[in-house]
Image (cartoon, each protein chain N blue to C red):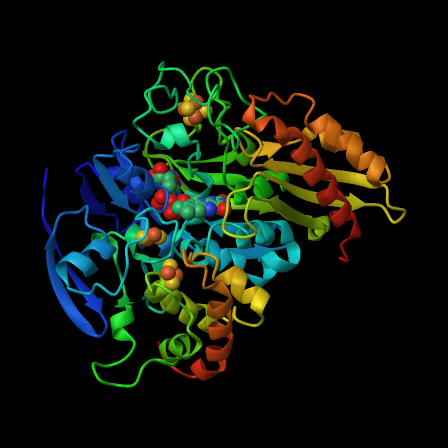
Length: 331
Length: 161
Ligand SMILES: Cc1cc2nc3c(=O)[nH]c(=O)nc-3n(C[C@H](O)[C@H](O)[C@H](O)COP(=O)(O)OP(=O)(O)OC[C@H]3O[C@@H](n4cnc5c(N)ncnc54)[C@H](O)[C@@H]3O)c2cc1C
Ligand code: SF4
Ligand code: FES
Ligand code: FES
């Protein structure tokens, strides 16, 4: 690890004043220390924001929605009874993510901002990685890319967004509350927190340096009780998604889809909202035929690169299964 | 840039004062500075669980904890029973059940297993498998580990770690 200065922020203004381009907020540290040990991230200053948990660490649910403190731990959200009851997709995504130890450590804001698991990104002995080394090329496009993305990729980077929680949240229309270093606040839809790779894959989010995520907001909708998250991986537990789908369904009594929400994970460059699939489902009766049509629509724009050619089919099947399971939920 | 700092850690009921580089992890401090080598380094990358310790009773990966940021009482495998005292029930059951081969993952398994029980996630073999999945065992002693956790669970009721 490169040398860094460590500073502990007792409150939000202190955290903001210590922040900056060369600094990084330190929450659970499970992404940051991982990548610092690999010399992929090298902040000059770590700003420990864990004392801010008192201000930004609670979880509250009421008629207007769910507010998740940015510093709440994954395990705390996973065990929260109102989330399990009213937003089961969020609970499903959390309990299937990482391990019990990591969930005890990791914050929700840090989870949203986890970095890709692309092997070339994580290994500095490879020169060509536009994300780590802008302009150097992309070793993965012709290389080991089995886990990488097929949706939202560019010719400059095909890295996947590996997280689970953000996929459930993007399906449920979540947004994030931010505090800007000058002290003002703003709210950003989660769908635009992460940027498309385009020709600047090294710029991953629309956060300005020093912006702090204080909370995640999810609107209330009674039909979110009919929501779930299905994750397919190489091993049955403690692995990143090869493909995952977050679903929420508003079904009429006769089974017609009034509204559908579809998020996809493990398959895309960003937490992916599959609006084409949602449009294909609206007004249809949910059955195998309509689910398959929605899945086709979701992957119409998929681009594969050799090893990951299996992913659109795996993604379609995962999505069909998730849709049928969601339709069958007792709510 | 090698600023040193001072941190007081509370480990297994004792206080340890450390002058240290900000980069040192709890795992390295335990093993290299405090002589507590029971906690193992498998991967140093948060992937194997060998370095699991408890902080205020919650299981965490010590390879991902910075000493500078540690807050609370740390319990390591050495802290589970006194020098000559009886073994912690989880240790005893791992022994009785032969829930290891080489033993390298075992301290992490035992720390994780204790938390798995106290969290209330040891209700069935399936639940134990899911909630112990953060602890890898290269010897694949998994079936016996699951049995051990299941057998020890009732013995932990009403007990502090
Ligand atoms: C072995 C392993 C397996 C994993 N498996 C999964 C999995 O299956 N599914 C999954 O979803 N995740 C998985 N993860 C990722 C893990 O969930 C993330 O590393 C974790 O959630 C990050 O949270 P943190 O608090 O530790 O972040 P940190 O490491 O503290 O921070 C991450 C980044 O976010 C920034 N940051 C942190 N908090 C804030 C804030 N409030 N405002 C602004 N910026 C902030 C930091 O500066 C840093 O850049 C895995 C990780 C490991 C190591
Ligand atoms: S896919 Fe992206 S992160 Fe991976 S090597 Fe290519 S540019 Fe780097
Ligand atoms: S050494 Fe910490 S998880 Fe492997
Ligand atoms: S007993 Fe050898 S690694 Fe688990």
